[in-house]
Image (cartoon, rainbow, N blue to C red; front, side):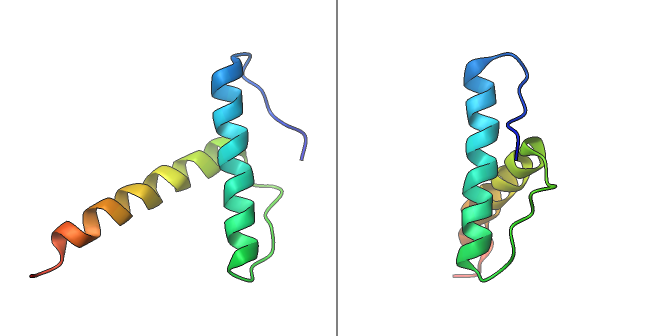
Length: 62
């Protein structure tokens, strides 16, 4: 994958890091990498997954 840039180093690093982390997680689950998935999509998925992981324990009946 050619790194996509927005011209701001910190944001570019965050987007590309999210992309790489998501690809590694996919491989860890036995799935193929998705080189066509953009870094912004990977970041959105990471944020949604984090929100899910934070909210589910709070919503579970005690």
